[in-house]
Amino acid sequence: MTAWNEHVTAALLGTERRDPPVLPEASADGGDKPGRLLDQAAVLAVRRRAGRVPSVEAPEPVALAPVEDAPVVPGPAAARLRRILSGEQIRVLPEWLEAAAGRGFRVPAQSLPDLLERGRGDRMLRPSIARAAGRRGVWLALQNTDWAYLVGSGDDPGGGPEVWETGTRNRRVAYLTMLRGTDPAKARKLLRETWATEPAPDRTAFLATFAHGLSLDDEEFLESALEDRGKDVRQLASDLLARMPGSAYGERMAARARACLTAESRVARGRRQTWIRVEPPHAHGDDLARDGVPFHPSGSFAPRSGGAPVGTRAAWLREILARTPLSTWTELFALPPMEIVCLPIGVAGWPGGSSPLDDRESDGRDVHIGWARAALGQHDAEWARALLKGGVMVDEPEALADLLSVLPEAERDAAAAGLIKWVEGQPDLLRVLERVPGPWTGALAEAVVATLAAAAERHTRRDDHLITQLCRLADQRLDPAAASRLDVLEPAVPRAVTELIATLRFRDEMLKELAS
Image (tube, rainbow, N blue to C red):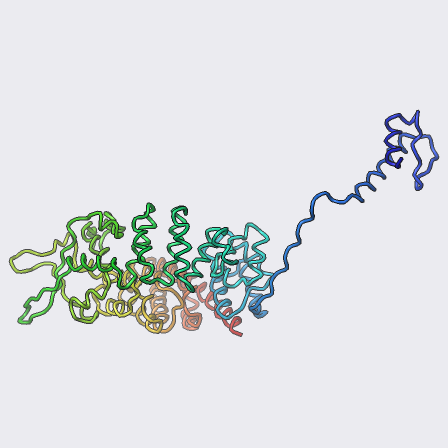
């Protein structure tokens, strides 16, 4: 009989009938038999538990963090990152991350937890984190479900082909995006196999990856998506088809557009010249809706720059022109884009006393806005340059600002500088600059500094809002070197300008640390 069983028997019979056994390390002296029984039973219980083999399998050890390819940022840059994450100039964090990743660096391991926690509450920051966090960042995110957003949020979905079968939507989108860059046909085949069973939001997200490697090989799939039950899917499919040169969709839109815009010869001041006669669509059918032109396009009731609302027919015209291949017009008018955008448009005063165009329905502005949208969607730099330089859309500065992204990088600053000079002192200035991504350098930086200097010199109550908002945009986009040109304004400047100068200096030091 074991010592444990002897103690159990003594307990059952009672210590008056059965003396409890004496353990070797215990003493039999004393008359408190029940107390000795309990003390020894406690010792035996601890021994039994300490020697017991677990009945469940031990958890698998966590895999070691992978070896990093990219070097960690230099020490001063790492110290500055800690300052940023602690709250100092936190708005420059995306720029720090992009600059570090662009120079081939990664975030120090010690800063990863704070950085991943920051990304948990800021979705806009996640792509930048994914590019700079390195392999250890993804490994760390796999250990904490709160940080799982990082897996699949960048260009690397964090796995192989099994990601498409078992991954989250974000990881599947990342995988499909990667595949569209290397093997678009395989990506299309995978999506076709599961298309019917995917929820509408997922179908929209997956279809958006077709922007990568888009070609006529995708036309059949996208044409079928025009019949999809999801509104966003149908709209996205039509937008992608509009960007596809040589598609049947483009031919359908070109036929509609040629019915709206025709070339007419007219004599004015003894000279014969070509005019554009405009006749907006009179009806909206199912075929137009199927091709992505809704009955009430977005903004169809928004006020024009001149104050009058945009009519439904004019909105249809804008949508059709925006989806028409721009080559349609160079073929029709046999002129380069710069000359086409400067052609007069028939609005009133046609022979016979009747206008081919009711100015309550449309005017030349609608034609130019349609062309501007087409240049943006088709990424046509020649048309963008013509619309920016032609002077025909001075009253549509926001639409022109969108075209800046289409120009070659070397041309953008000068074009943007010219654009903001047109609207200097007007409420449109801030709305234009919001559409101009950074960095603002060269002529654009000079124009922004000049605008700030003029407003600070006047410094009226009316200028306070302009200065504050312009400084808020400039602190992240303006070339840090501009701080020296703003120094001459101190000390008699608004507080917003002083804070802008401090931010520019901070950014300047930050970028120099990452460049070392």
